[in-house]
Length: 472
Ligand code: UDP
Image 1 (cartoon, rainbow, N blue to C red):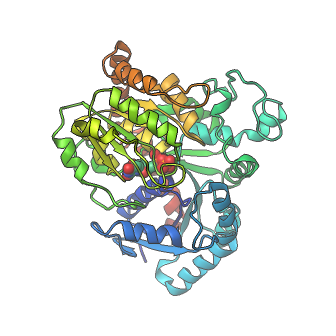
Image 2 (cartoon, protein in one colour):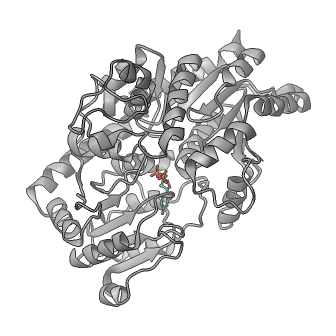
Image 3 (cartoon, rainbow, N blue to C red):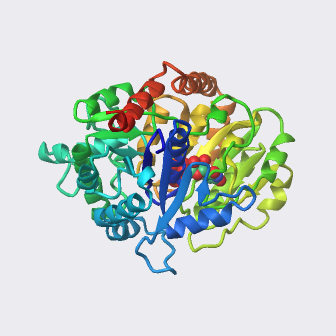
């Protein structure tokens, strides 16, 4: 029998949800657990194929990588998020997860599943399965506790009339929806993307968390203490972030000790290019794994980066641009050849921890934001969807560790705005203050996971719950 037990981890099938849950898997392994990590077949194959340089195995030092179908046809590109999530409701229904557990338990008398951790946005209804086996179940929320909290309180906001029945804000002006959160713009509400399907899913997520009663979050208390307190009056909240490889929290530039489960192969040559730049000179530009930009927006970005007159490293992922093919404007590469590095997927943690990085132009995906904080890199914010507008509000208004890139009336961030914001951040007085704030939060993000820190303590409590029935 494995002394720590055997945990089943079920992420949402997106890069930004798999990455932190995989880090939690490694933490559990280091505390004596065996982990079964359940991906969709589609993502499992991508991860296996992308990591040929640093291979990931099905049986991986205490983590078993298993997969099941996601319910979509093989030729589906899986870019329609609400559709993918809906298909998962069938393909990962509680009965399917129960059969998987049954199969593992029958095969391995000594290594039966002893606990489940499931992404809060999927696999609703697992409480009955956990109760059947009398094992602990935790919901895992991959972003800010604020995002979890505002979704949790949707029914209350509708009942008091702050939100319409369909989740639309009643007011265009800024509103303090939740007492422990800052006032939000109507566009900050994280369910506005994806229409009715996403709104319903957010409500289901809240109901599911209420039923499960315990939620792990990839955030830390010092970032959003008041909102952690507010949600804790409803359910047990365990902020255990930042869930990133420990070696990056020690502030040294090196490869991760374990391969990361990326969907694309890292282009490590950019690290050599970075080594040749001056300290804190490079603008890092990346919009994560899901965002799609219009051709006109890409052209404005290219022109803005050219006008910023600094070296930059730009991730142009396949699928970043509408219509498929990346189309960098003609002539652009010629003009900036001396100071540009374009890659299709960056080793982002190594990049952000590199001393030559000056700032991060980001889509404000939660992992990117937290990684930037832990490396002390200030941000320029260009959110795309879901929780990213809310994250921007925290970055700009609450923590004051970045600046917004404002759009024009057509929703486009113009080149002049990009060049001006880079200057304001890197040479202006605002920039000096922002760097001070981000350095302070960086220290805090590294302290919280050390013995006695808030995330360390939350994780210890969680671990105790996961092991409790093994000790009884
Ligand atoms: N990432 C990476 N290389 C890239 C771009 C992103 O390794 O070129 C990683 C990044 O470090 C983060 C994840 O992919 O862990 C993206 O998650 P995030 O929440 O930032 O955004 P999403 O992709 O979910 O929109």
